[in-house]
Image 1 (cartoon, rainbow, N blue to C red):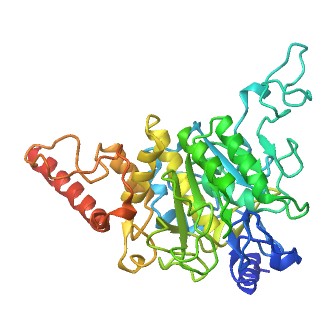
Image 2 (image 1 turned 180 degrees about the horizontal axis):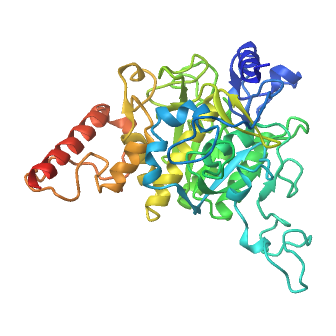
Image 3 (image 1 turned 90 degrees about the horizontal axis):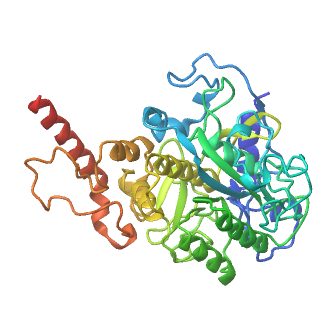
Amino acid sequence: MDFNKMLSAGLAVVGFALIGWGMLNNTPAQAYHKPAAIDPLPNHGPFFPEKLSANKNKKNDKPSVLLNDPDISKNWGLKISDALKARGITEGSKDVIVAVIDTGIDTNHRDLRNNLWINAGESGKDSLGRDKATNGIDDDGNGFIDDVHGWNFVNNSNRVDDNHGHGTHIAGIIGAEGGNNFGITGIASKVSLMVLKYYDPRFPSNNLENTIKAINYATKMHAQIINYSGGGVDYSQPEFEAIRKARSAGILFVAAAGNERSNSDKQKYYPANYDLDNIISVTAIDPKLQVLSSSNYGVQTVHVAAPGEDIYSTLPGNAFGSLTGTSQATAFATGLAVLIKANNPEFKYSAVKDYILKTGDEYPWLRSKTGTSKKLNVYKALTTLDRNVSASGALATNTIGLQENTFAADPQTTVDPMQSNAFVEFGKTLMQNMEASRVRNINNN
């Protein structure tokens, strides 16, 4: 039996919307957040199929040239985003902390357990020789007891396990361990995943309130990136303030554009559409690079596109399977943010955001869908960094013969591509400049 086909069929039946449970469990519609994977209800939260059909790990005859993970070829998004080509530049870093605000994570999953964030204040031994992770004491004084990997804001505990699957799936796309001869690899195979559980289909609670608490926790505990694969159509001033506080702390907030099949320029979707420059709004594309019919779009409100249809990733119980939605696309952008930050630890959120948006691949049919007309390209973003090329395409070295004002944009400056048509031609200009530099170097040698 093909579980992937079963899962895909199930997603089609419910409208391909992993951003809400309301339609499936008859939960009354209310103003709260849930994870983002395809939901017609005006909820703040995620949406899943009724069941997640999983594939247990199986060997694959065609492992990656760079990695030995047997199922790596099953995630088409890695190839189309040129993620594997970037492995020679960086695999990420455990120093980069990503807060995954979702349904929790299977902390025992073989492809995730080594990439979990560890709270230094809740690890090691206390004065009595007890394990701080389990001694029932708030050792670091942050107001949370034994929060070694994060916190469960649904039942206010340190149990961050995932009894649904969405959070585990997102975590795998971002940072499944690479090179361990098991399963898959994430965009960043080295990262620290902070687990912040705000939604649980088994235990109804105030998801929006939990989201705000999770954002504040991520800020307090020094995350550099927040992945939020969820949302809804309801504006929340407290949530806006929490993200603005995260902005002041230098945190990049990567958010799902939503799966309402709507133009976000006309019908806003939050938190992706708050007017804050530390937010990246991500929509989803299929293998043919078309925005999914279920995905939100908008030239003023959606920044970039990323793979989001039938994405293969981790599921609870050392399992794997495919899910669809802007949730998955968001995780691709977050993974790229990790790689950029790992390669350039001094970069502020604005620089990381600029590199993601300005180095993508431009396609004419995306001009009516996103503000940049681009899908992200992991390799291009990192080779730009690795070769000291500015985000405008200008080489910082070997610039003899170039006019002083040929290129203007600086990756460290805060420039919103939504406000400038100049960026529509950026991808083309970038590659032309890189090729011209390559030719000059050849001629000089």
